[in-house]
Length: 381
Image 1 (tube, one colour):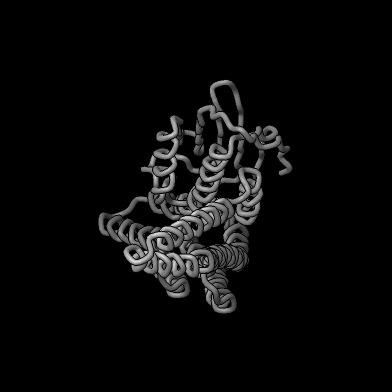
Image 2: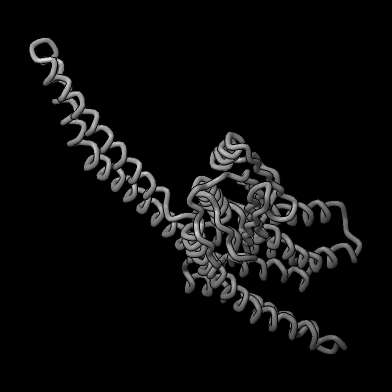
């Protein structure tokens, strides 16, 4: 999965720069001197640099950047207004747009209101100059509408900031929840291993020491102690195997249920295209591990909206396909997928990844004779 790719919002933010066509047109449609050209294009490029930096940054104080964007728009307006007149209004609108990208709604609307009042004041100041012109009504009307639009754009940008912040907080909470769940699982495993093996290993050590001391004085009793050590060791091995089977989960069906919970929390739709086939235990454990790794990657990296899972079986083995509609790409695989690929290769299977349209994982598991096949199950997702 790609680890570093700019979200669509970053690229969409560049689209708003198209509205700079108004001041550009206002400048190039009139004859200008060289000094005026250097001044205008310098101001324009400086504002564009500030705008891109504020939209594409990662981290930093949102309120500080919002005020910097507002100040940049205001200064650009003041710098080019003598050259452009009404066409310079775009910079005020940009400033009002940028100042809304912060947590303080009242502050953002206050600064935007100052820009609106400034524009209305200029409108009334220049109104006598336009009287008598056939277009006299158009410019004041446009400036008045721009003043209202600035307030709406500020509020809309603030709502967007709140939505992004809520999403960020949700992701942090989900990550914390996963971390706490992992810590709890580690503590459970440590506790189980202590309960299973702590006392048993202590008994084995004591009996082994006793058998060592009795080896020369009472060989028969020493042999009995060694047989007891063997019996206790076999019981401990059985208990450990039973515990490991419990750690491996309840198979592919249970893993699908956990995957649905995780994907639902991330806003991703899970679809299982057909009833699940019965699988041998070892194959089912590997398929469940691959599904878990794939879902983890989708939630963390893919930015997908849907995931499709299918499992088919035939004489040659079983094929598990996991397809998402996310970013895709051919970035280097992480440790999880590399481990699964090695695991499948060791068992005679294969794992293929295609990142051209989202990400598609196709795992082929070779046919394995199983004396106790799992019963068939219907996907209820």
